[in-house]
Image (tube, rainbow, N blue to C red):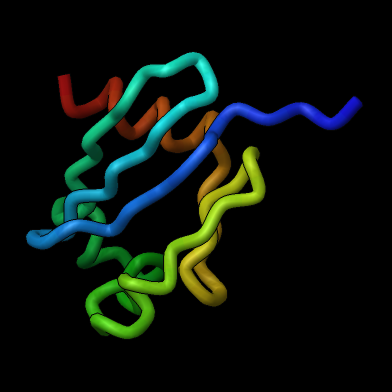
Length: 79
């Protein structure tokens, strides 16, 4: 049985990533604070930013990958 946590992702204006979870919850994650880090710099390219896809566990923007655990951790740091 393959686990799935994320049902959909949508890159929005202002580097806000909308993450919809299979539980029905929705997270709006502000990615701006991370864009100065080398790992996330490619996301400043609109083509890369808008390429976000998910396989249910990871969100991928080209070569940049985030796990659902990492997304939740990033959201907790925003609080």
